[in-house]
Image (cartoon, rainbow, N blue to C red; front, side, top):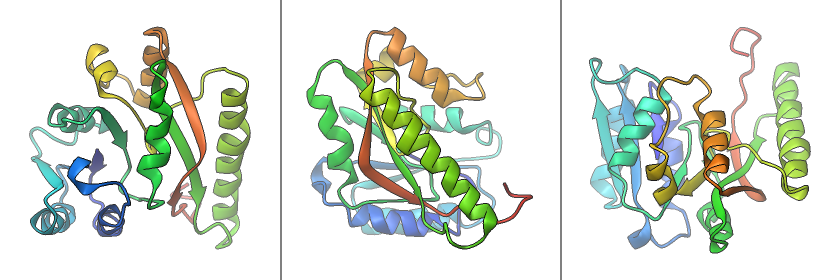
Length: 215
């Protein structure tokens, strides 16, 4: 699932990388949720849909869309058919084998969700990008890794991760009334009796914001 609202600058880069994934394409279903975008996000996504059979696009108009990420994700999930559902934000750039790395933990039936590692691509650019990189390192190489190694609860961070689809359906998907829908989902999966794993070598790269206002 790839939710996108006004992401014309980055959505093409992600979808191009999706076409390069090493996971078998006949077992892969990509759903882009164009959430009431007012730029060319939907047009770019449609161009990939025409060229690649495994890419699908949902267009949400202004009356239906623009109500938050959880709402967009729920609509995308309602159209999915896979045993495992993975999530990527539009401004992320995954490794080619990230699907294999994220899904391998589900060989254990007690695992309900998985989280990969976010890495800042433009860390050296300026002070702000270095601060964001430091925040990500602290969050993923210290906090998440410690939780996983100590048998605690790693957090699903909303992107670069996923779930067993059957569990997501059982708990009703994303709660659209919650601002931190990813943290909420983490706890609900755990309370349903399933564990969450963090996979440090499943890396996905992001462009950090580079101004104080954006930060």
